[in-house]
Amino acid sequence: MHSSWNENKILLRGRLAQMPAPSHMNHGVAYDLLPLAVPRLSGAEDRLNIVAPRPMLEGLELREGAPLTVRGEVRTFNNRSGVGSRLVVSVFARQLSLEEGPEENRLELSGVLCKAPVLRSTPLGRTICDMILAVNRRYGRSDYLPCIAWGSLAHRCAAMAVGDSLSLTGRLQSRQYTKLVEGALQERTAFEVSIMSLNPRQDQDPA
Image 1: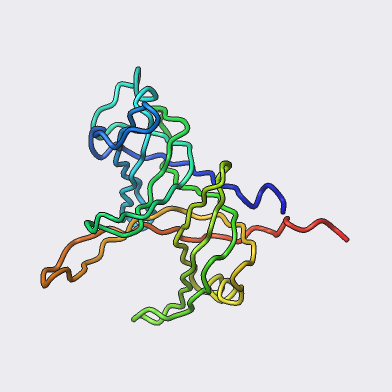
Image 2 (image 1 turned 180 degrees about the vertical axis):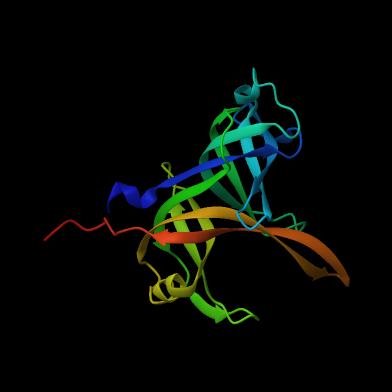
């Protein structure tokens, strides 16, 4: 399989929604969580969770509302605590900077479909396709990313089968929803990849 089928690159440029807060420790390194607000063209706003090693933040004069550019990859893990969403999606930062510029939310992914696509219609009659893309990391683990496609792209995605390789360009977005938990409604946030385009297949060598 071509190495590009494990691509996972994201570029975000938005504004720091809150000051960093402790996230977790891993191999003796402390990690912080930074909520990043990235506007859409529609005027809506995606609030995305950035995880960064604390040493990366040293020397950056961070303040709430300041511009922040993030380069990294999308990560997922299963939340087994029973509190909040089951699938936790965040952005693992490889590079942070305070550079100014237009808002950005560009994600390049390649991986394998691990669940049959589901084609459906919204209440307003728009066609949408839901699917899960498995993206391998370098060291054996995989991230399982919920993806959605609209219109003609939705039909193209729906024609694919489990095990098919897929390469795409899109954006990571957040969506608010309510869930009934033990008789009470809870506000929750889901994260998903909105597919903008499917990239040409490159996993097979020419005959």
